[in-house]
Length: 256
Ligand SMILES: Nc1ncnc2c1ncn2[C@@H]1O[C@H](COP(=O)(O)OP(=O)(O)OP(=O)(O)O)[C@@H](O)[C@H]1O
Ligand SMILES: [Mg+2]
Image 1 (tube, helix red, strand yellow):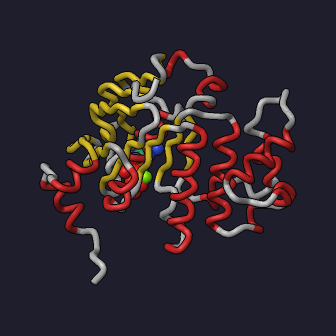
Image 2: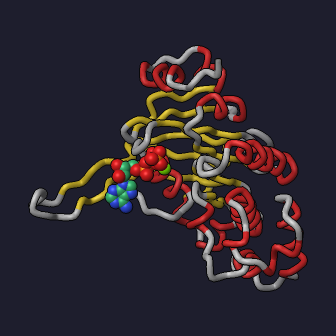
């Protein structure tokens, strides 16, 4: 069924405890994600933007099952995230991180990195080559190590690894911001290509609100852990309601 809701969050809250020190003698908690409720429809892209420290990565980790949360609900394909086993969840949602340099283990060959994400009972080499080809990398990449690749190629490897478990949702956290401008479009195009081929749904976090609007169906703007604006990309770009969003749009540099 197209356009049903594949991922839903309801009033997610998360706080972090600040370690006690001479300046903070008592326990202090900071609220990093506050009452975040969002929907991702199947086959669509939900974009998230917001200033540094607004809680985007924390939220992304929560819905990927990488981080616990204090209250609220995450429902993936009509099932509470807490009722999934780790293995089941990996087949639903995969996260791709900003920095492909630190997200790939430098001691492992690309083949091993991809094999580790696989079920044991399938033809690993054949499947790994298929994954590499789907992100535009040659099959001899299997025997190489991360340091032998450029940043853009490493992000392709990270995408190949994420696809290996055949997830239905990809959450990409600033997936191109550590890459050269010339490579950014290539990687974004891989995401869009794979979306149609593999019928994926995406949550994409980007600083560039114009680019985000160009690719997303809906956009949520986060500020201080809260969603301050949420609507279709057109609504957000053409008629931003929140002053903060207006600022974010006007801060996008215009090329003369
Ligand atoms: N493990 C942690 N322990 C304590 N505080 C944390 C932890 N992780 C994140 N924070 C704090 O939570 C807030 C939100 O961080 P988060 O990384 O989610 O922001 P972000 O929106 O992804 O920022 P950026 O755009 O810079 O990536 C920040 O104030 C950060 O310092
Ligand atoms: Mg972040």
